[in-house]
Length: 261
Image 1 (spheres, rainbow, N blue to C red):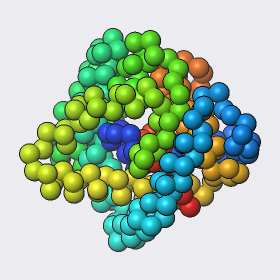
Image 2: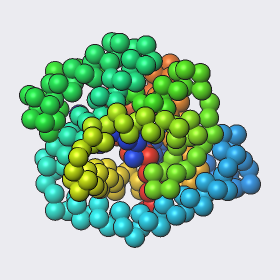
Image 3: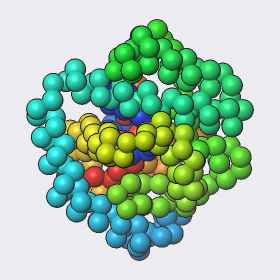
């Protein structure tokens, strides 16, 4: 499993950019170039969303991207892989809880098994030993749980700093937070440090893939993110995952932050 793919099991949805951007480019470079006034049916708040997107873009240019470049330059790849695995492992309890809420006990068992194996044999999650044992499942979060409970379609929404989401998925963020182990740390400084490391590590994974964006950046990211999200919500029931292939392993969570070049 690659560094990007392991990050996808990390917790909050800071993003699914790697998977969506690269896959959409591979599927024909079909970036949307429609004018802003041509409203996407799932994006009735496009004017607002574009303004938030521009704000996120400015923050990324000034802070996140330079920091990510420095991190990647000075951090050996094995260390980066271990960091991605560590945060990925912390996302397993969330998957287990939401799998149970969705009536998927098998996937819940897989997530718990991964967490136990990687926390013990994998030295606190630094080594993704469960994947080497071919113990893999689907990631689940509370936004997906709400979809299973009946909130199937939702309006696209760009969140400050967090990036692409929907109204439904935004409503699931509090539940996602309390099912992520860092929430229960009693050391505020440690929690902040670990959260910052997770964000920088994920951002570093986007430095190459984001160059594949073509046309209108906002539309490209929105359309790719919505397509990927529907695939996740339906557990792949729409057909083959357009963002997966034998030759590629992508990050499932990096698309939460819509970062700029």
